[in-house]
Image (tube, rainbow, N blue to C red; front, top):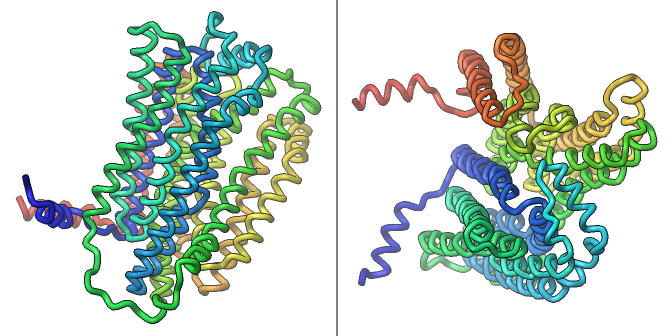
Length: 577
C-alpha cells in the first residue's frame, strides 16, 4: 500500500492556482458544458417518459431547486470572498476557521432542508395541483413540449409527486455541502477543481437520468413514476461523486504550515466569523432575489396583458409566458454561463487585489471583465437570434411562437450577464449601499413599466410580447448604469478603452449579421426537421464565428481582451519543433 504522504505530495504538484483569465476561461467552459448537458438530456428523457413523467419530474425538480436555493442562498460566494480576503492578508488561522464555521452552517442547513422536504412532501404535492386538474396540466405540458399524454397513469397524482419529491430530498445534503467546498476552493483561486466538479456532477446526473429512465421504461417495463424516481436520484449520485472529487482536491492543497497566529486572529471569535459570513451573504441573497423577480414580474403580467389587451387565447398566452420564463430562459443560459464563469474567477481575484490596495489591477480587471462579456455575449446573442428557428427546433421541436419570442429574449441574456458582473464587482468592493439602490431601481422600473411597454408595443403595431422583454432589458440597464457610475466615482476608473473595444465588437457583429443574412438567401435558415436544423445551425455558427473572429483578431481586440498573441504562440511552437 502506497504511503499517503507520497501520494498527497504528488497530487499537490498537479493542483495549481488559476489567475484571473485562466480561471474565468476554465469556469466559463465548464459552465457552458454543464448547461448544454442540462438542455440536451431533455430531448431523449422526455421522449422516454412522456408528458406524465415530464410533469412529475418538473414538479419535483422545481421544488428541489427552491430548497437548494434556500440551503445555499449566497453562502458559497460569501465564503469565496471571505477566504480570498483572509488568504491575501495571510490570516491562515482565520481562513481555516472560516471554512469550519461555514461547514457547520451548511451542514445544519442541509440536514434541516433535507428533513423538511422529506416530511412535507405529501403536503407540497397537494399544494402543487389537485388530482382532477392534473390531466389538464399534463395535456398543456405535453402540447408545449411536443410530447404525448400517458392516459394510464394519470390517476396517481398526489402519491406520485410526493414519492419523487422524497427522492429528490436525498440530494440536498450533498449539493449543499459541495457548494460550500467549491466556495472555499474558489476563494483560494483553485478555479479548475471547483469548475470540473460541476461538470462531473452534471455528467453523472445526466447519465443516470437517460440510462436509468430508459432501463426502467423500455427494459424493466416499470411504472413511469419509478423511472422518474430513478432520474431524480441522479442528482444525488452526481452530488456524491462530485463531493468525493472535491474532497480529494481539497486534500491536495499545500496549506501553510507553522504559521504565526496574528493578534487580529486571536481577537476574532467564531461568532465574529459567523456575523461576517452572514454580512457577506445578504447582498448575494438580495441580488439573487431581484434577479429572479424579473421573471416573476413576467409570470404575473404577461398572460393577463396578452389576453386583456391583445385578446390572445388563454392557451396561447400561457405558451408565450412559458417560453419567456422557462423554455427561452433554458436556452439563454448558454450565454449567461459566460458571465457566471467570469464571476467565479472575478470575485476572489478582485477581492484579493482590493485588499492589497492594488487599485490599478482592480480597474484593469473590471475593464477586462466588461470587455470579455460584451465581446463574447453580444455576437453569441445575435447569432442565436438569427438562428432562432433552427435552434428552437433542435431543442423543443416546431413552434409558432417559440422562435419569434426567443429571437428577442436572447438579448436579455446579454444584459443579465453584464448585470451579474457589475453587481458582483460592487459586492467585491463592498459598495453595498449603491448595490441595493441599483437592484431596487432596476426592479421597480421593470415592475412598473412591464404592462405599459406591452401596451405601447401593441399600439404601434409591434408584437406585444416584445414589450415586456424590452422593459426587462431596460431594468437591467438601469442596474448596470448605476453600478458602473458608482465604480467610476469610487475608483476613478476610465472606461474609454472598453467603449472603444465595444464599438469595434459591435461593428464586427454587424458585419457578421449582414453576411449571414445575405448567405441565407442561398442556404435558407428556416428548416423543419431536427437533423436539418442541426446542420444549418452548425454551418452558420462556423461561418459567423469565422467572420467575427477574423475582424476582432485583425483589429487587435482579441489580443487586448484575451491577452493572447496567436502569432507569438505559433512562432514558439515552430521553434520547439
